[in-house]
Length: 93
Image (cartoon, rainbow, N blue to C red; front, top):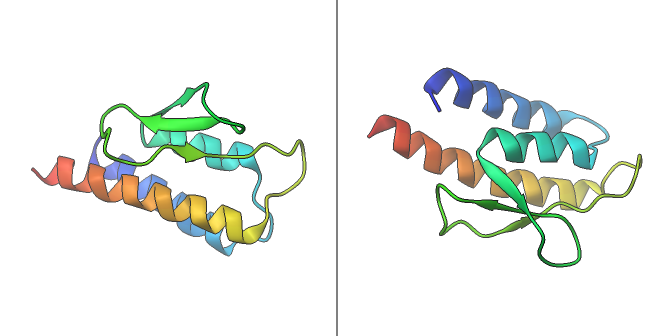
């Protein structure tokens, strides 16, 4: 992970926050981008950070082609921003 990649991911997070409809596939791509991996736990697909195990597991519900509820999408984006903050600390160190 480097500064340019982190900036690109942060730009994508901001773009999604301003977008009308957010699909689970958009959020899953971001989860992969910050180094999360899919694990078989719980009711919804759960993404965990192997690099930063103290970060909470992140559930991203899949509802087919439907957009996610804006509130749920923003909560997921908040968690992904915490991942970015951890990566920024790692890159700066």
